Image 1 (cartoon, helix red, strand yellow):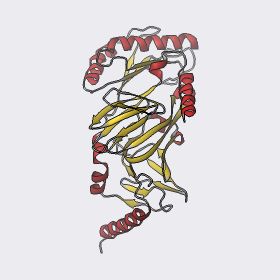
Image 2: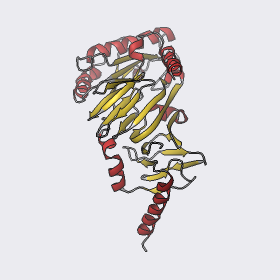
Image 3: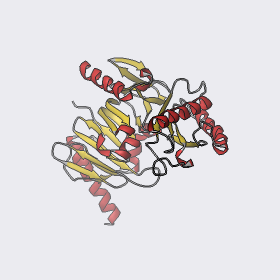
Image 4: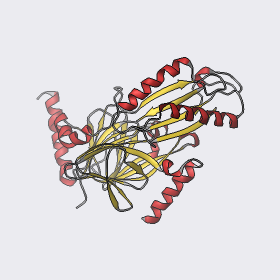
Length: 150
Length: 196
């Protein structure tokens, strides 16, 4: 798992090329928070607040009465209801080079998804994995509820 | 039995069946502009396409089986997630004088509108991409685009945004108005500002 994350980070740096690394590794920001919500970075939960950055490999997580909204660099919006967990596995947004990808895994909870520029330019590059199947997006707005595997 | 009622009870049966095996499901909603996209739900058995507002499918459910999800169920299952939705990003285009980083007078007058949008958001971040027309070389234009983007960043940078700014350039590679090489075109000399 650690190796995989390292690989994705390396990819993000490579694609960004040149300018400030720290800034380019950020793929989105937390915009709204209610109650308990965290960004899990390398297994460590950081309390989510508006302006908390999100990077590849991070887990978006809300507690029993929590909710949180994140806006990504390509204008994709994900807002999570209570008791939700979503990992951002891959994210590439370099339209000039045709590097576009957004893949995430949702293990439980509820999600409101509003697609952004990646879905417009390359819809097949988006996938949301759940324990029982995968959701592909063709430029749109949807909701999904995932029951955790027992 | 009325059509709507029949349809509703059918939906309930389908929902009930899906509920036995797995309660994970997807619902498609219309976009803000009134159009409706598509969602493809793939499981072990195959794939189900959703194409209508409020049309739902169980994730990992029977292939091709869809149902209509009621407003009540949507509110119950997704009320909190929907309420947490951040404000939609706003996009502004600013235009420049030829071969220069000077904004046109009209675009200069648009700067306060961008600042207002920034101030109306709780934790704003901005992206600025500079563009040029096709006068000059690719390399020169890539550099000019970046200078334009940086200039705009300076003009709208506030403590409220902090370091949540990203600047880039597409040079002459992303024309708003397609032209041959070495063509002066005011619509292509621009910076695109996204406020999130």
